[in-house]
Length: 147
Image 1: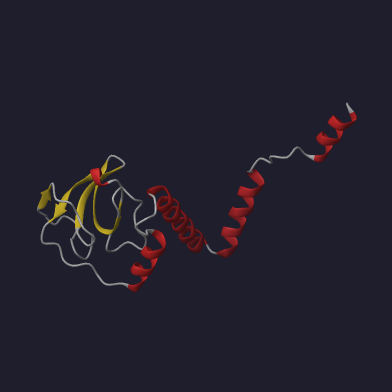
Image 2: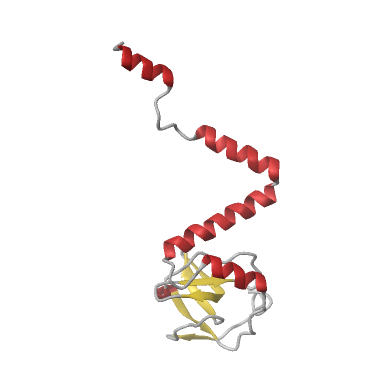
């Protein structure tokens, strides 16, 4: 959670508080515990985002929040984050839609880091591996002839 919280820094957590956007929360995810800032919120989900991370986390249910970190430094201001969150996590969007959008962003970032040619090759390999839903022309002709 750099720069607001340094690695190994002790924090005081207040449990039972309903977090709001901008609060730093302690939460469960994948059998781990995370400390990130709440970037967006709706009734059924929270989107957290570490201050030093380029992309937000997948949405979590509010029940996964353990508590809020007291006396955390304010969030860094970023037009990039504001605009990205408007696309990713409008308040009326269901959590599964936000999850798909965040997953798409991570794939785009991965492709960007690989470079254009490597990404195109990876895409073509994936398309070639995908099984076709249509029978090939030879099998189709055989069945039509009764053979």
